[in-house]
Figure: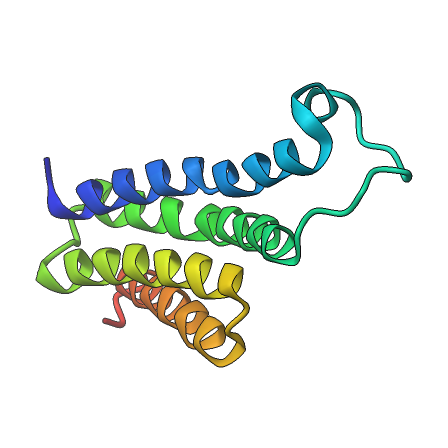
Length: 132
């Protein structure tokens, strides 16, 4: 499997699992059957870390919607190389770090991790435009 696609697949799998921690907290707070029920205004709140994990998951999905097509386009157009492979790996690591530090409530590191993933996406877009 090409390295850029390898990192994209790992990123997809990781993002697909980000819901697990906050749903486990939902089970602790609301019970198993309460977790399956529709949410109501009377529901007890999730733990603060679980609320942050949910927000981090949403942010990961929003950013994946830009990164994934860029990575696929680089691959499909045959303009990938060691640089694009590396930025795909950086994107994966940045998004994992972002989820972990956001969930832990570490604000400055959260922002730095976000910009790592954003920068990786920018490099892919620049490559597609013939500028990198």
